[in-house]
Image (cartoon, rainbow, N blue to C red; front, top):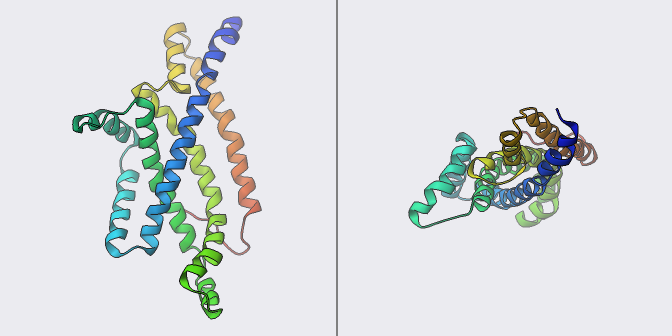
Length: 222
């Protein structure tokens, strides 16, 4: 490998894709959290029809490949007059997919709170709204936080699928550079960059899990 070419041409070009990757991750995660919160609420508090709709959404997006979802949103929606640029289509597809997983994380966190907590709140004369606002939700958020951070880390890697429709994120730039230089070892460099991004987030998740752990409780599992 030509070290000078690697340092002054390949690496800077790949690094320019990191902001796009992080934008995709942050926007998709925010969309997934907002929609996932609604889906979780529908599963836990909604009527039977709402619960069925929420569960159907979750099963569909968890049971079909993310790549297919990206292709559908980018290539199929124009047929009904909805045209999205590649970046927006990727955010929507990844965000909708993440919402299904985040909904289950939040739902399991709420359901994981022991029944004794509800009974204690009822014995104190608290209403249902007060019980969830002051007793259940604060604990559920603590339980769910590590799993949500893990989902964020997973999204960093999932954004590489946006390259298939032309979003110039980290992996797309890697493909460009491999085609230009005929140096397949650049894929290893991309993997190292992804690792450098994901590893601190994973360590952050472990720190949160320790810091916000509730004694006697197990964290939310999906």
